[in-house]
Amino acid sequence: MDNREIWVIGMEDVEDRSAFQRISQMRFGHRRVPLETIASGVQELLQAVSIIFSKMNQFVKMEEYSLEEVSLSVEVSAKGRVSLLGSGGEAGGLGGLTFVLKRKK
Image (cartoon, rainbow, N blue to C red):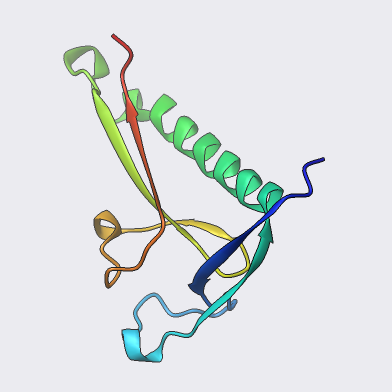
């Protein structure tokens, strides 16, 4: 197991975080987070996205389209929780990770 850690500055991780908050009401913190915690969260997120893509044919006739690029904006909380950001990742200019997945040529 990898015991390395990195510093993460992020929003306070609370269970009952409202979907809509003013930036002035958000609380931020920083702490060292094990790399394994973040890697596990990213793996879980990408597995979920993979399932969504595999089910796309139920909604769209994928043989008529070519999915060339997918961009995912991800927030990492101060405790290392990985969450998908909605609305293109424009949550008040907060930082995070952006994954751009492109089709191999």
